[in-house]
Image (cartoon, rainbow, N blue to C red):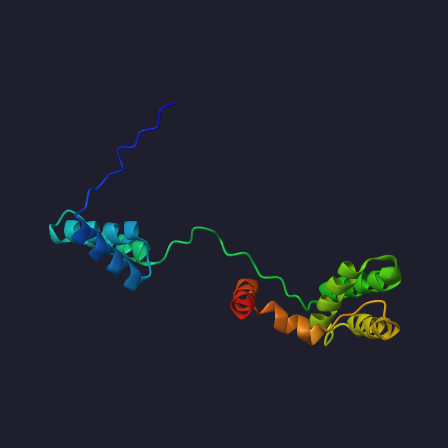
Length: 165
């Protein structure tokens, strides 16, 4: 089945006109297509080709921003269900603590650091990590790790190269 596209008009705009249209659309916070529609509607109304009711309706319709995607509702991270789920996960982590390698433990230490104020089990993980550090099984310095994550490895490498020359 062939669909008719008689309602589509392609416009070849000079750069000056295109940039002016973009600037106006940006100020109004609508798309360029909507802004072009508004100019056509305005012109047709001034020439008497659109009645006042249709003009006002279309003006209102094309003046509001069109969302490409419906915004997804943001889940509440601190809802009772989420907290219960996180607590259960942290309990499982505590049970499996000695069964996993250093990388896995570091991951959960970082997560526990973020959740320590809202989930009691996160504090248990941090206490366990501290005990293991004392025993020497894992060496994790959370503060140093946080500071290191903000550094750029390329810059560190350049500094090392400069110092070696």
